[in-house]
Image 1: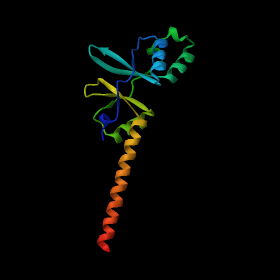
Image 2: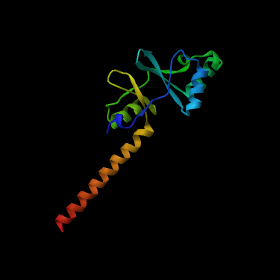
Image 3: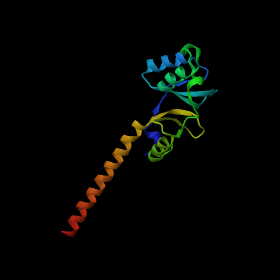
Image 4: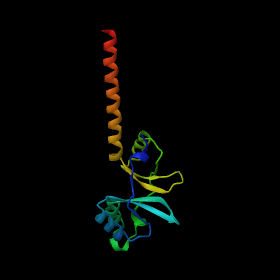
Amino acid sequence: MRVQDLYSPGAQVARPDQALAEAARTMLQSHVGSLVVVQTRGADRRPVGILTDRDIVRGQLRLSADLFCLTVGDVMTPDPLTIDASAGVTEAIESLHTRGVRRAPVVDGTGNLLGIVTLDDLLPAVARELEELATLLGTQARHERKLTA
């Protein structure tokens, strides 16, 4: 199974120069805990960061500044892990684990944003694959018992 089968399209986005208060409002209204920070050039939207609710709180406290005085770029986590839509589920989970993150923007072959994938999207797919494997092993065991009986 591939990430392209599991990711959520239409990820909520922000720009690095956007007011942090505006981005926080977007997160609140959209009921999401993160925004993909993108740099736009024409129709291209390239992920350049991730903004989480935790980034907002930590950044505001670290900089001792008001939300209305800060921009997304001031507190975002730069250089986000991106996962190509054609990546396999196992590869995506390994990448998330290596970077120690629970979510990543999904990009096409040219690096443009398609959506977002989370560990919660990937783990059920792994569980289904393991269940199918267990079923296959059980079927094989029953078949072998019939042959030896």
